[in-house]
Length: 56
Image (cartoon, rainbow, N blue to C red; front, side):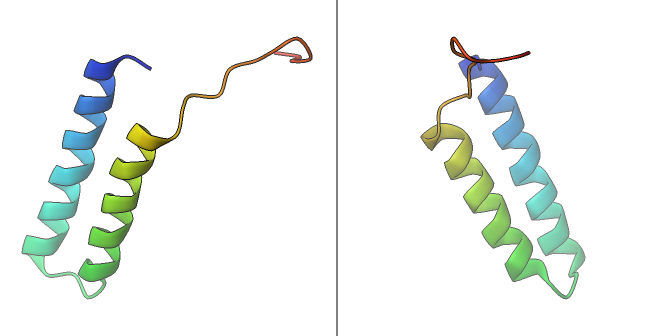
């Protein structure tokens, strides 16, 4: 996945998490935790690619 796309996705996730935090939904700490995990995961784990045995 291109770097610019990862940055856009991270900004969208952060914006939604901030909006949830500001609005004051009851599970806002959970949403913030999930958002942090999503942002870390998109940078940490590589994109899955098909190899010799892929049927896609």
